[in-house]
Length: 145
Image (cartoon, rainbow, N blue to C red; front, side, top):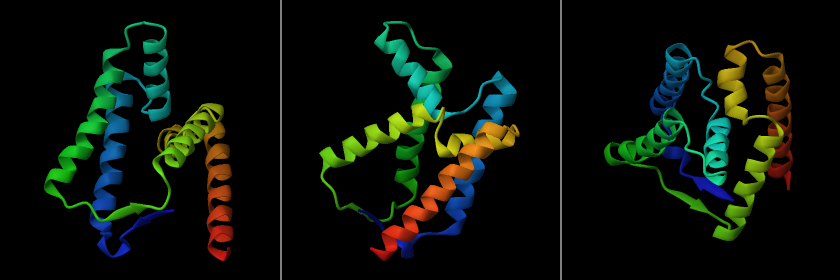
């Protein structure tokens, strides 16, 4: 199980992070007419690499920016202590299952929530309702076990 030091949580960083995600999604939509669905961007890039096609530069740049931003943030703001109660193989398998579900659902929860709902997509509204319902049910049931 993933544990994060909740005492180190600050609403300011959460608000700043959310604002930056919205700003990036809006800039990509308004500036380039593209949707900032990370699973779609990553999936398309990996598909291009698998078929030996040169991936779109904007996708590679966007993904590199996400990774670089994490490291840059960690240089200036201490990252709260986190621990994982599972082995790396279990975490890797869980990540692959999440990736499979993301492709099956035509996007991840945050992509549907940030990009889909802002475009008033009915499909995204349905997806977010399902994600949230099952997330809440899992949290409640997991807490009782």
